[in-house]
Image (cartoon, rainbow, N blue to C red):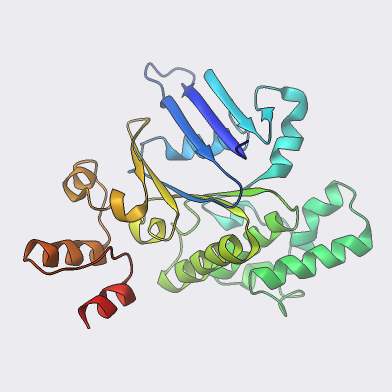
Length: 271
């Protein structure tokens, strides 16, 4: 059984004539790394909110660990399984000290003090913030704040983490810190990741990419396959990873280039 299943999902905001999401179908298994890409207004952030039951579908079903999100009595059980990290970490950080912020959610569900300490230390270690326990949260860099927000979710021990444009407000170094953390959690700790982004380079490390446009999923597949559709991606206002554009340009000139997703991979291929 899939960890998360969406079947013919449709959602329309109150007062709007057109649905924000139309006939969405996708399946996520335990340990998957899924990227959902699309231009602004494509519906990807609405989809993220549906996965965490911040919204409910008007039509269709969303099943999380066997529980339908329409079941109002099981909302907190679903949210324990699907953690959510938002675009702006300042909207998610609630305490003035790092360790207190990670412990906040655990205290709310009455986790014993000894276990809270263990979970906080473990979560901070996983996101590379060991040693920052007593630092003031407002003095952290943007990347550190976002990693702290991720630590707060990890401490709750969800099956899946949904990240809605987690690097949109960060500088390149902060973006790298967060993406490296996400990749580590997926590859080394087998945490299921659903990454909502409009940065194609970030999506390239996923196992599968879904492309959204005007509320629908129009394309899906492995990153190398999806990013070969350069003209299509540009037609819906998405950039193509520069490395893919270079590789495809070389292929068009007759060079034998394998599937390339990273700069290092392209360098190796050319060498």
